Image (cartoon, rainbow, N blue to C red; front, side):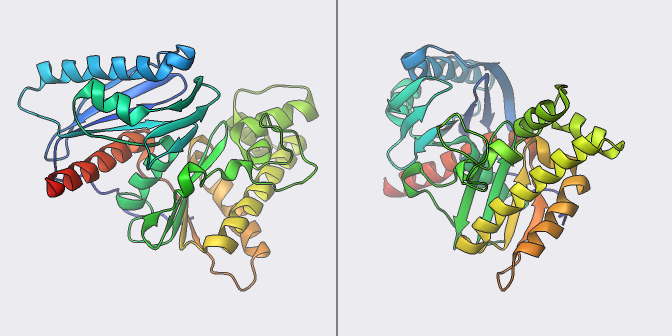
Length: 320
């Protein structure tokens, strides 16, 4: 595992609004022209089925009005909105989210109407990946993969210095097949990476083998470190599956660096050292990527939304 210096600050640019919408809560912030984050807010994500997008924008509008009252000297020029699920960045559409209940939601259109400013729209992991690519652990690389490992696994890929979007379908590495006859995924497939190597998968597998459900993957790791053979086997299996998934990325896009974020990456050397050994044993002539822990932390999504909003603002002003 390689570590770098602290991430870069957002720096100077237009003031922007940033919204990172999650399955349970919604984070918001106003970024001033000097890059300072103001008024960090966490509110419950409004769940209204098919009307959730409208409800999200309504909450965003209320928060923006609050910022205008609290920070009248800061005038945002654009907003960035990140959401989970399948996202079409280029057309501003939330294609599908099973957890939040929308399909083909015109987020950009709704956001621009509700906030009265240009809106940059993207996927939550791609936004966080953008922050790591431009400001954090992957900065300076041209080809990189940023993987977020939590309840599931998703990624953001960058090729020749640009994000690879593929109409919103790129990055679903959690649904790559690593063991064809493996456990069934809620999506209907089998043997997918996130069913074998995510934090949730580690807890489930340990419960299946031991009959005991622990409170998170960290607890399974602690059991393994204390000599629990079942926990060690589960951990080793997850590392092997993750190495298989990363090896697929290496053979396809040959990243210089693979950044791992999310709760599982906080295991540090207990994850990175066996992962590096296992991955190295799978590769032959391929370019071996540096494996690096994410630097920015839980605000990566907000910073990614701010970066996207600033990019849009600069383009809009230039076009004007």
